[in-house]
Length: 308
Ligand SMILES: [Zn+2]
Image (cartoon, rainbow, N blue to C red; front, side, top):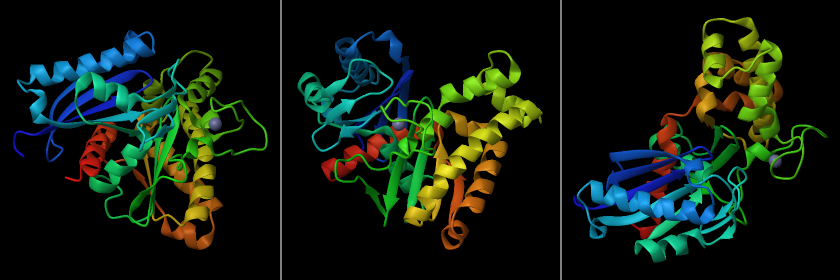
């Protein structure tokens, strides 16, 4: 298996990350592209094909060396059928049998799953949820995704749609969400909302990086923004903790970089708002694999599906 490799594509709303892994899922090469370079669905699919072909060629490999391709998609999918239902933050995707299309073009085995589910798989196998049996992994970004590990296995639900903590309503009424509902957690803690809240507080545009940096330096205005976000997250997580009696919640994604202030507020709220037994049990942890989790999860998916 020394000359066998796996390719993982982590498709995000802003970036596409392509990784070449060896059989043990150690990264051998990585390339990053901007998603909006690929204008529509057809161009994006061809772009993915070219990225994969390029990765194989640039590393002196041929398709015989590739065991399979795993894709992490930022939206609901049917992993078994390799079908993308839709992508809330990338236009023009509806009911696309992406695995089949890519398989035909690449002549390689192709598997896909929702990116947050892949993150959960990765954190459970190699990251912060490694010693956990019941974990919720949540990824904070433009969208808010989630993946559940229950009784030591990724829980998919009846339609492979379980784990969508970002679309847990946290209020009776509230902002309209990309999913079509309202008052979903994502509308309170997604990047857009954080930026809007920060703009109100600072009376100017401020980036997430600057907001995190200012909070770390003790800026009260920045801290107040992260506290508000942490409180909303804490409320939603309390619901999940009470419902599922989790032993850990793993938080990743760009926003998790806000660090201590955000985590302090999340923990405070979860312990205050969840029931005694469940609240005492659960640990709130930062993701261990950072932005590599999606790609590693896609690699695990390939190995699982091929039974190797
Ligand atoms: Zn929603």
